[in-house]
Length: 373
Image (cartoon, rainbow, N blue to C red):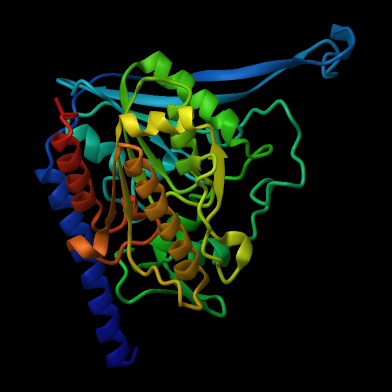
C-alpha cells in the first residue's frame, strides 16, 4: 500500500474515531433521560364499509368488511418532573416521526434533546404515512411521493439544501452544518417515507387537532410541509399554546381573504411558495398565540441551485405571513439563523451539527413566553 494512501486512510480513521469518541463523551455528559411513562395510540381517522356479505368461506374477500384508516399515529414520552406544556412534533412532507429522532450521524435529535430539557414529547405520523399508513382511499396520481420505489435521492438532497451532485457523487456545501460522512448521507436518504394515499392537509389538521384535544394545551413544533398543518390546526382547537415552525413551506401559507400577497416565482415554478385565503375569523386565531419561525442558510433567490432558490420564495412568503399576523395584532417572529450567529443550516436544521444550539434558542424563546414552567 502506498505510504501517501496509508497516511490519508489513517487520518480519516482517526477523524472518524475522534467524532465517535466526542459523541460518546457528549452522551456521557448528558443527564440520563428518566421517564414517568411512554406509549402510543392512533387518533382520528374513519372507516369505510365494503358492500356485500362477509363469509368465512372466502375470508380474504373485502365483501362485508371495513377498512380503517386516515388516522394519526402518536408516540409519546413523558419525563419525570415534566414541564406543564408538552411539545407535539409535526413532521414535513415524505417524512415521519423519525425526523425528530436520532440524527443521521447518531447524535440526539429533538426528541431526546427536549426530553432532557424536561418537556414531554409527542411524535406524530401524519395520516396516510409512516405508522399511520392505513388509508381509506386508494393512491391516485396527484401525489408524487406515493408508491415505491422512490427515485428521488438527488431531488430531495438538492431541495433540502444539503448540497449538490456531480454525476452520482453528492457534495455537501462547504459551509453546511450537515455531517459530511458517507453513512450520514446514507441514513438521510433512508429517512424518506412514501405516502399510501393522497396528501390531504385538512385531514392532517383534523387529526392533529384531535390529538391536541386529547393531550390538552401543548406547544406545536412543525417542519416544512407540516407548516400549513400547524396553521390549520389552530383553526380547529383552542389547545395550541404556541407554534415553533422550522422552515415552513411546500404547502400554503394562510392569509385573510382579500389580503393574499403575490408570491415570488421560483426557477422551477411549481416549487415556489404558495398561499391560500381563509376567513378573517379563522386567521385571527393565529394572532392569539406566540409564533416563531426559523430559516437556515444557503437561501438565495438569485441562485441557480434549485433548493437555494425555492426556499428563498418560501422565506419571502414567511415574512409576509408574519407581517400579516402582526398587522392584525399578533405576536409572530421570524428568525434567519445566520443573522443570529447560527450558520450552515440545511432544510433539516433540527438534525444539523448545531441542532443543540438551535434547541437552546427555541428553549430560550419558550421561556420568554412563559411556556417552560
